[in-house]
Length: 309
Image: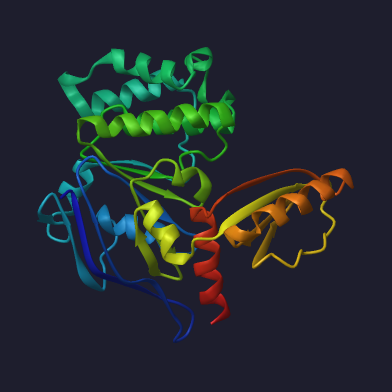
């Protein structure tokens, strides 16, 4: 086992007597060669948890063991074991991506640094065209990919990636997920911190959904989905952001901009398809898709129940 978090609680003092419980009795384990997703909205407690794993924050109660040793007793050791891509952009200044990644590789690996790994990462992520461009002239996506390479050029036994795909274009996102998966081939473990639930579902081995400092559920993606329901989901791309009439077979609905998502029972599939075709013919929706329940559906259902309660 790489990581063992047991009963972790962290409370911050607010204004007056107000207190914010950022992490509330969290427990999770991470195995060797596993990708573990921490999913949740901003303020869910993800970054606070990561900072405690790295020994940057001291928990109010609970324990964290990294490779069998207490992080509380050896915080510097924890940081030497972990490689981190923070959520914020790394300021590169006049350094080029190649210079920045090479420098980080030499700092972490010393004499074992292999410059060929820089070229391999850049080719895998299609970054070669701006590898020698000054950092302050790069796009947000290029800076994000550079920061990712800095984190994995000489990875520790645990790699923590905080929103690695922010600002990255769709094509290179696919390359990025492939590189993340390849990291685990030699036993490296990955914690993926994200609110991009749909992308994470295709990548992680196990996942925990955080909300208001608590873990609502955790397990394999299929296990998390089946624990909520065995329903189907229909996703629509609206022709405009006008409201459409919710059909009678829809068990629940969720709108996000021009995306509209319905949940439905499997025996209503034929009715749903007939209805969707009529909406396309009327020009109200551009296209639609039908699929089993996703992690996003489970996330919405679990968190909405907590909000309603």
